[in-house]
Length: 166
Image (cartoon, rainbow, N blue to C red; front, side, top):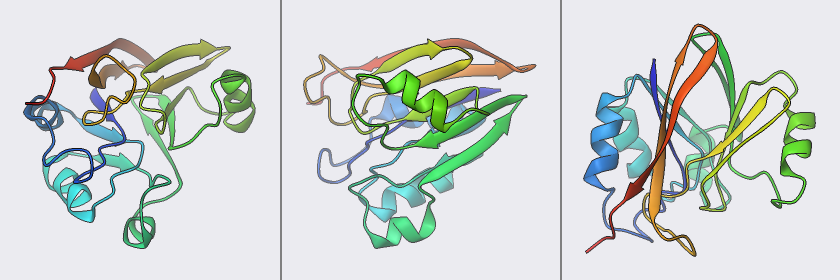
């Protein structure tokens, strides 16, 4: 099963539209995981329309409409891999320890907020932040991630660097 991970799309505040590379990956994914800060409900509607399966949460910048439609934390088991999705995990220092304590029954935690790509493992918990496809902040590029899950394992985690917007 092929997954696409994204977060912090921030439309229309940070971009007028999502990158075509991201949307092509959405179309090719078996499931899409969005870790919050959509900003606009029409972005959620776009992902709902184009995703085979969408697992999403709201972020700190999401208003009442998105908060009514999305949970703060989402859980899913995909091909035997237990996922949790949340927008914020707090400061980078101590993140792995805090998240392992908060999500002891999870194999992979997908998070956002910082716009900083992250891929670490602590014990059995893997933490993934796909960055942002529209707002690189202090990063050299915008990004999203893809991965494959099969038979209870995660394979081929790839950070996709997006070209600068024109």
